[in-house]
Image (cartoon, rainbow, N blue to C red; front, top):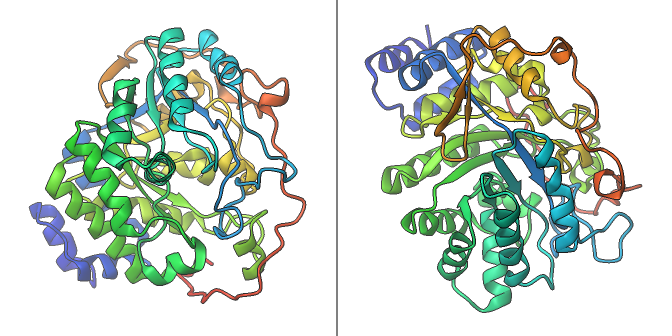
Length: 412
């Protein structure tokens, strides 16, 4: 009954308020929240579920925030064990896995390297487009863009313009930890403020570069922080219309200082919380067309259930995922094309392959996956050699300060 007024609004197509968002996150009536999110999603996307035949590439894990960004397990100092920076030839060699796969998108993110210049990335983008002209490039988070602007003494607008000229189609949404100043002061010292993150995406949208938006949840944030974060994304979308999809990102505690300080190992969020974040995101973000579940962090099984909780995008093939596997994710490194089609059909939905801009590449009427699609391989399609290895930190060396911990939704 507490959700009845919200249900009435959803059924009438009315915008939800901050108080509505708080009530949804506070409620344990997950099935009702999921039903409402399904209704909201169906109005936008029907029974379609999108995925990309994509490949994740991480050019470097060297990052100037290694010692201050306490929730990250991916970053390394330049001489730390496991640190790497790819030459362009190595990046191109890794990208060559696309030649044997139906790849349509390169998803490129990495650390904030203190010495890699903008020219390194522009040469990378141009080289990838030359070698793979039919593959779109989704590249560099707002944090990376701002970092390159500082290194080069340029404006973020000029960096974005140069990236667009070199072949970048869209920006990923990473780097959007909860915008609450208190939460960010605990988990991500010296990263962009929420306003700065939004400003980079605003400039990208003004230049005709659409982008994606995210929220890292399940660490030290409050329910109020979550709602305010979502409303900030909604406000920018009202202004620019440039966000393509929203992706809630579940915090993983292994091999990072925050996880050690909090005494957590394994998955930090529950399936209940993962599904609720998908559903509430769909309900509050009424102006963003798509909501994505990132299966490498919440498992393909939770992602499949999320398709009936307001979600219409299953991420993609990925090929070799480093960032979350560094933080303890136990999912497969990739899902094959046929595995994704089978997963979507198993939820009673219609699979649609898309490109980076959500233009339809292929539908699957009459398509029959190969029989081996029923089981997932743990490695990607090109798992051999140093380019396809994960080296965990032996010890995260938790810092002395204790974050203020809030139990969120009973999930922690």
